Length: 401
Ligand SMILES: *Cc1c(COP(=O)(O)O)cnc(C)c1O
Image 1 (cartoon, rainbow, N blue to C red):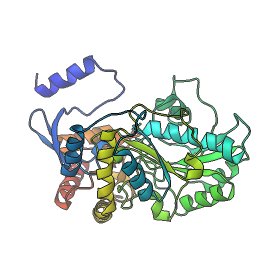
Image 2 (image 1 turned 135 degrees about the vertical axis):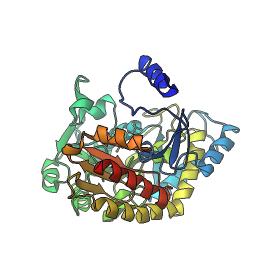
Image 3 (image 1 turned 180 degrees about the vertical axis):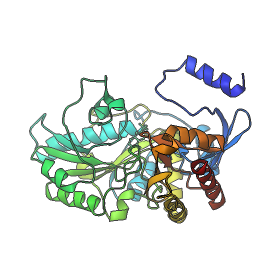
């Protein structure tokens, strides 16, 4: 047995099988590259579903984390700590918002957004108690809690986990008329991904986000943008909403906010919206802890330079022009995306997304299929053009082979 086989067998023997990982056991990583237990190197074209936008082992993030590890790591929110105010102030400023509510994982932040919108609906908008409705899109991915999977349209994510939380209406993604028709007097929020990541990097039709902004503003409904995967540089802007000059009422952030070092998530909004909370009404033991704040502060400093967004613009243009050349050759049916983020639909004649991912792995590229036939490419924003080209060469090699 190789050490890879031993590692996989041991993992499968003692963990729930809620994932189907590619057969690689990673031991170390740096930048856009990981090394497995047998010393083989792979280009990471998934980047932790965009949690690793700044690459593996980013020096600035590691230094910030190490310094904070030696000072204080956890206080709970029962006490103040000296990194909290800066984190909230600087994150609010990056978002052009007023208040921050920190959590840990993306799903917790989405849950927080749902709770916040409902409370805002009852306390500010005046919706009768228990009637608040939130409009969501089909093919959404917002996380894995019981409430969130209640409004998923993916049978894999949803089946056998009921009873389901009520209060959500699902409309087709990208269909503004359907969304507008679903808004009623009890509607408190529209919750959307500005680009649907898990669904296959689906970019909505031009004008959709701006249209949603207009409808929600005119009907006194909150526009909640789940930018957990699309945000923080991935698409070439700090937020994907910026591509349509849209400012939502609430950003939901996670993944890259923790720099791939620690889980950090947050809901960021106005005083009118996040001001609905009083002490004791919501919380999290780890939310906003000193280590999380220290790492996220470094993430925010890096985002303020704009260099990562610029890198995503430049390499993204290159990525999409190269991928565009593959369409129509028989192996690739369509390519979508924005910035350093692409969904590549593989023609079934070339195999499933899983098979293509395995063949990429054999050539030293780690990527992940989503929904059967789509390969999602989302390398760290720190990837070099040479490495990106090498990764694209491997993809071409697999598709031609
Ligand atoms: C990953 C993701 C989530 C859930 O985040 P977790 O940290 O896995 O709970 C929610 N929304 C979007 C858009 C995501 O990509």
